[in-house]
Image 1 (tube, rainbow, N blue to C red):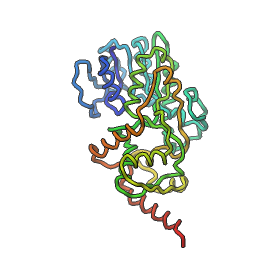
Image 2: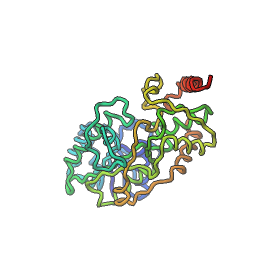
Image 3: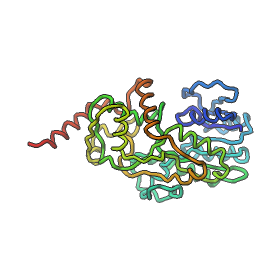
Image 4: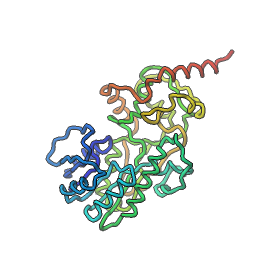
Length: 342
């Protein structure tokens, strides 16, 4: 197949492109040309540069077609999906949109495991500290709505995937590395809340395979699917597993979430700190994707080991907020002192 990928140099999309190429597809990527793309040399890959907000640039990308499918990995605003629907209507065999589980988690109430039809539950009051991104989730809902309105099985067949937190080597959010770096430094871990809320992340290779497998499943047209690991962990479970894989003993110190939120280092301009979810259960039904795509995921211990190795061997920077590590340890010391017997 001939495939256009809007994006293609990002964390998830670059892995999806590699899998598509391995499967013999002809792939054209359309990016701004600013991100460092992983080196790939093959006659089946064409790289185009341009601004996705420019109608003429998207029209020019069509000249490399006709395309059997278009993947849109970088639509974050309604205007972006509106322009994509207008540009590709009647011109592609499939349109596959990368959405997010945040479309559910901007809702006031959800029922776990969260199923795909919970995407339109009433919004919660605007919550700035929503760990799943309040504005992000609202805008992604709007992108979905525009694409579903444009969906037509003959002229513009739409499918969507809604990944949860994506983890693995090269993760620009460095979520796992947040905890890996702190475990490696040997100090205790400050854990917001009780650490028992359940969550699912997903390995980047598993998420990318879901996107590529979707292309081959005709029964996926007109549907959206959750993408998450089959294994469900609490934050406490995750930290114990991570420490075991690293080979260190660890001690956590829990701090009430409300008290934690008052600490200056509980916020960071680089993104939400103290991942993963510490504020509500967030588990997802995989019944639909398992039935239609035969979806299965890599054991968490396996891909976490790969992620630990990559970050400790190849990454030279620090995790988000690590410059405040001394303040974290000071808070832990104060908690220990307050709890010690007279």
